[in-house]
Length: 171
Image 1 (cartoon, rainbow, N blue to C red):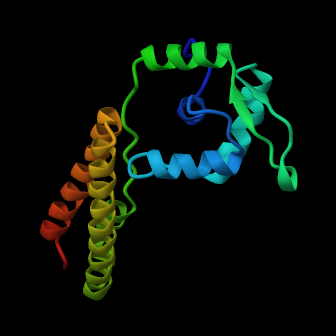
Image 2: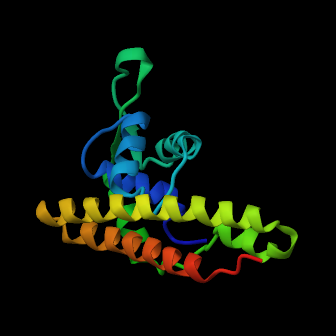
């Protein structure tokens, strides 16, 4: 087990909390805004990790707000755990593409199904690439070179997916 004893989702939450205390909902919004183009987190993952991080002493709970919203703040030990996590080897990518999985079984599709699959995937990747480009441009304009670089990864990913979709067999 890594020295930090935290998984990437927990680490992402600790990283986001460096901006200041946030509720679970605010963390979800920040994750979508800052990480969404290349890293996904579900609401259930966020709300499952926050109590674990609190039990480990990596975050502390603030005073409950409206509708029992609970703000969390990173602690000094949380900052140390995050720093250790940053220093660890990142491990291998976990590539899981639902379109490629369906294409692998292309012989079982009708030609119309594949055409619809490719069309929907192309639309998604085109929109996602445009959004990531805009976010990267905004990050760069705001002086966030690291955020911009991570968003450029998302742009390149969607560009590669679009290129692949043009060459995928259609029966």
